[in-house]
Every structure is written in structure tokens, then in C-alpha cells.
Length: 494
Ligand code: 4AD
Ligand code: MG
Image 1 (cartoon, rainbow, N blue to C red):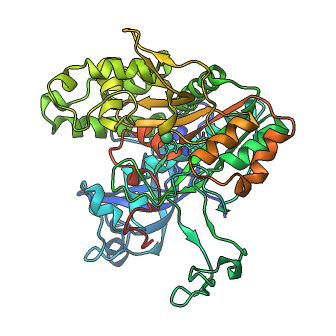
Image 2: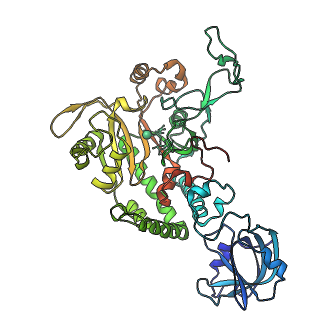
Image 3: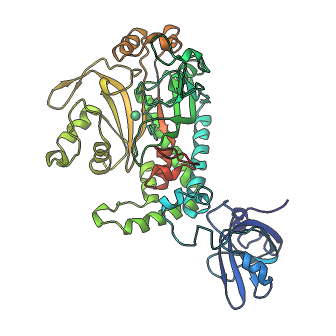
């Protein structure tokens, strides 16, 4: 089988090394068919690029029956001469000498029309969604970002560690897990106390889908130095928002000998590098999404329109330093902000509360107008494994707050939290004391605590929600539109 991808062919604009004049074969799906007095023009797309190749037949060249079957969505193999295009919009086109129809698409039933469909509508048609310009662009960008993630870590001496998907521990201590079991749901075996007897379950204990690979990742870092995970992650939180999925992909680097500052430096360099990679390698797709977003912005009220286009926003993020400040400083800004004083925040803000997305977005979008890294959060609102600060926090008025932990959250415009991480508590005594305080049985995590028993060391890491990154880079509004098969409450048909 010899055929060239449309991406490859379109690169061959007329020039010295151009195969213009040679016979080529292209295969793909029909986007549009247009008939004029002298010719038939078919726009073919094979998914290798957002751009279509135009294939042309002279009027009367193809039998009527064949022509009738070439409709939007049908799949063709076309052989013909690659020629310089007469029309505007493309450098080269294919003059059809032979066409084979792989699969027809009955126009009466084919749900995609050459017009714009709503994203909600497309979400319901599994096989056609990736054939749209918008979604195929997103999928190509998603691929490029995933590749850039692996490249970044490989270039920087990290090892890719595969942590388990089925676990017996709740890494975040939040309890929002999906159970994994082979017990009969209608009549599970019971213990004497009348509870489900998981000792009879497949793994001989209660198991769940992982909410994070961090705990296992820490074991890797305490042996290999620098590791990262990149795998599916599951959260059974019932949040029907545009930022949450029940199944998402998380990237979790973990580094021995890194402290909070090193962790922040890595997070900032990492996200900037992968965004730069997408800008360099996905120019056509990003230009398309940039145009799409501009159209969408026009339909909004003036005050709700964003100041920067997609490409400008990405350029802005990679060329400006992220603002770094403590949670205590952020709360002071929020408490003194206009929306707080006018009672415009839905949730009140004061030292100790978990910041809501409206607060995070105020800091990033209104106050600093830049990505922000918030650090040193109150201990009570963060996970048990974070390193405790020695000193309490003080604000500008000399008020003292605490205790705090060496946490960091990276906040992005339009997204809110994109990264969460921390330096880890490396003292065995402090860590076990904290576990007992929050009701985690140290015995249950004996294997994790062993890293603090034997050769403990300062270390740190973070988790980047991959879909939130793709959401940011593509400028889409809903996280369900940046993953091929979204999993969310009541959504798992395909
Ligand atoms: O802040 P989180 O919960 O942190 C952890 O899980 C740590 N173990 C990470 C670490 O230190 N190794 O989650 C990390 C990131 C969030 O910042 C967010 O981007 C993403 O994961 N995330 C989600 N993305 C989509 N849907 C959800 N339900 C998400 N929950 C978290
Ligand atoms: Mg978090």
C-alpha cells in the first residue's frame, strides 16, 4: 500500500523538490463536494492535518452512480496527478484519474453537515466527533502535549514510573474513590459484624481505582532520584463542572532532594516548555482554534470578552514569570478586594478557608493578570503528606496564622488550579502524628512510611491535570471536550 498523508502532500508546494506532476494516491473522508459546470471539487481530509486536499474531476469524467455516492462523510481512495492548484486557498491539488469508494455515508442519515454543530451535540456522536475540525485539532494538540511531557522529563533526567491503577490506599485522604470488586453486589459475604467481608474479595482487601500515583511515586523518587508518572486517575466526586472529570490523566513528577522552591521552578519551567512545544508543532491547529475562539468571543457581551486571543494568551504565559505569593498574602488581597467588599463573591473568604475557584480566578484574571503560584496553605485544608512549616504565617498587619504546610498550587487564567503539589513531610514522627490526627491508620500505609524509616530525605513533587492543560492550550470551555471519551456523572456510554 503506498499512499501519502495529506499533511505530507500539502507540504509539497511547487518548488525544486516538489513531486508536482507525479501520480499520487490519497485516502480520506469527504468533507465537502462542490460541482461546477466544468468540474467536481472534493475536499478530502485524512486526519493528519486540519487542512483538506482538493481533488478534482472534470465534468462527466466520473459515472453518475459513482458521483452520487461521493457525499460528505464517505471514504475514498483517490489516485491522480498532483498539480499546482488553479484556485485560491491551496497550492496543490489532485487531478483524479481513479477513485475507489471504501465506504458510503447516506446523506439522509449522516448526522454531520458542513456547518457548525454544537459541542454538546457532537458529544453524543462518538464516531463522528473526531472527524470535525475542532475535535480533530484538539486531539492532535493533545497528542503533541503528551509527547512534549515525556520529552521534557526524558530530557531532564526523569524516569517514567508506572504506578498502579488498582490500589488499596486513598492517596489524597479525600475518600472520593471508585471501588474495585468481584464480589456479588446483590449478596456480598458479610463479617460477623455484618459488614462486607473484603477478605473474600479478589485482592483479599478493599481496593479502589487510584486517585493519584503520588504515594507509590515517592517510593520511586527515593530510589531513582527523579521520576514522573503519567496515567489515568479516577475521582468519584460528584462535581458536574466544566473543570472536573471522573476519569482524567495526571502527570506526577516526584524528586528526591527538591524543596518547595525547586518544585515551583520545575513546575513553571515544565508547563512553559510543553506549551512552547505545542506552539511550535501545532501551528495550524492552534490557528484554527484561535479563529474559532474569536468567533465565539464576538457572541459575548463586551465586558465578558477576553482581552487576549488564544495565541496571544499562550505567548503571554510562556514569556512572563508566574507570580509567587503565599496563601496568607493572597487572602489579604482577597479580603481587601472590591468583590469582597461589595459582597460579590459567592463564598466568603478569610484565613483558613479553602479558596474557591471564584477567588482563584480573581487573583489570576483580575488582580495579577498572570499565572500565580500560591504557597504555604493552612495545614487543615491540605493532604496529610505535606511538609509542615516551622514558622507560623504573618500578614502585613502583624496578625499571626498557622500552622501552614509547604504546599503549592499553580493557578491559570480561565482554569483556576492546574497544578497541585508540595514538599513532602520527611520526618517519620511528624508524618505519623499527622496521619493519626486526620484519622489515617499509619499501619495501613506501612510500606509508604518505610521511606521515612529508612534513608529519608527531603523531597517534593506535584500533579498536573493533563486535561486542564489541554483545556488551557486549546482555549476550549469544557473539559469534556478535550478528552476522546469523557467520564463524568451519568456519562459512560462510550
Ligand atoms: O491537587 P490534586 O488533588 O493533587 C494530587 O492528587 C497530588 N497527589 C499531586 C501530587 O502532588 N503529586 O490533583 C492534581 C491536579 C489538579 O491540580 C488538577 O489539575 C487535576 O489534578 N485534577 C483534576 N482534573 C480533572 N478532573 C478532576 N476531577 C481533577 N481533580 C484533580
Ligand atoms: Mg489540589
